Image (cartoon, rainbow, N blue to C red; front, side):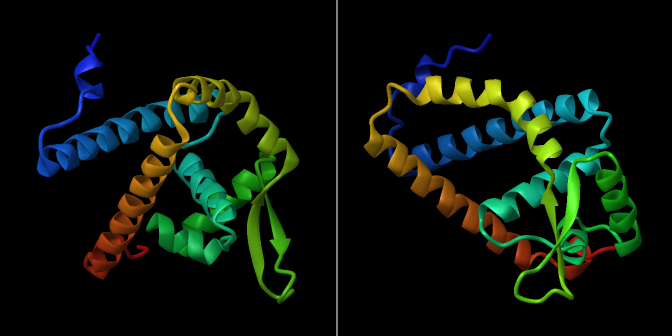
Length: 171
């Protein structure tokens, strides 16, 4: 088991601190992927099904629901592949199609109540662990951490848009 006490000490210099944050984010991404894999396996989902659920949840949380066409682009898979995936997720009770209130011709993907219940059942204990891990941290630290995560997410999204279109275009 790794000794994390060194990670709580302040890094020397800006460059070292930025490197430590990048390392921490890679570790966060890696363990998140492992947990997602277990969720997918325990709910008879394929890896792309879980990726799709994460994109739908993220879009909902950001107040910009995603359509199947947008999901195809986000995941870098063909429209027919996303259609097949969405149909499976609807049949399994995880997702539903919801008409856009501003334009009824447009349809967004959304979690069903059953899908939310399944996710909450699995990830609820993670939420409890996360809250317990942050309980002793002052609000100022959490505010700063949030700013860092927002900035890094924006940088990652910007980098993604700069990648050659062939690297992320639907096949």
